[in-house]
Amino acid sequence: MKERIITGVIAGIAFILLVLIGGLPFTLVIMSLALIAMVELLKMKDIRPTSFVGIVSLLLLLSVTIPNTLLENTFIHISRGEFILSILLILLALTVVMKNTITFDDVGFILISSAYVGFGFHFLIETRLLEQGLTLVFFILFLIWSTDSGAYFAGRSFGKRKLWPEISPKKTIEGSLGGLFCALVIGLIYHSFFIVFDDLLKVILMIIVVSVIGQLGDLVESALKRHYSVKDSGQILPGHGGILDRFDSLIFVMPILYLFQFI
Image (cartoon, rainbow, N blue to C red; front, side, top):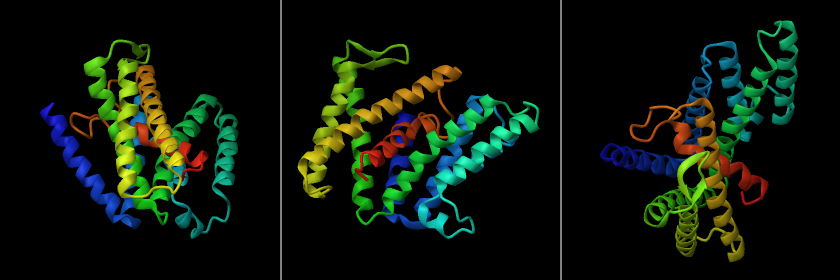
């Protein structure tokens, strides 16, 4: 527990400073974290990052993660969607050319894993680049962190009914509700100091979405680890596991906020 607390405090302070700095340093570090998360996912599936599937996965991840401003300045004059569609068609053609050395399952893994990891980090970068980006990113981070803390302490104190035992045996319904309540309290306190939106109802809806979807993102990664029979996605953060373990909620929340037009 001591190791976990020390790592959490150091990593938390470093990440807060990074968010404050923003700009190119923030973009480059987030893209690096996305690459590490992708490597962790490849290793879970026993795919070497230096293999063909591994390299293509990492390259596709970068194409998904790179911010719009940098993508517009490249020599590639096609949209992100058109580029991903082109990669899909090329990979499907390779299943024939390479006589199923690259299989349909490999293509599916490359696309889904790149989208799962990449879009979450991409929208984190894009949000920080907004005019109100600093306020929004910290708001989202505090909601996720307060949900995690509230769920942990509420679960330990009042947890009786299992939330989803087949996926995450320790999580409880009481813990989940405690996380949501904690997020509402912290979110409204934050909003009283830093105005997120002019409409209070929109703020409350965003708090609920972040808290609920963040917990779902945590369960998605738990299901992933259970499928591949691993305890943690990696060991880069002592006591906390890997990058995917620490960012599972965030990378699931960010695309949803984009789809719901909160960012």
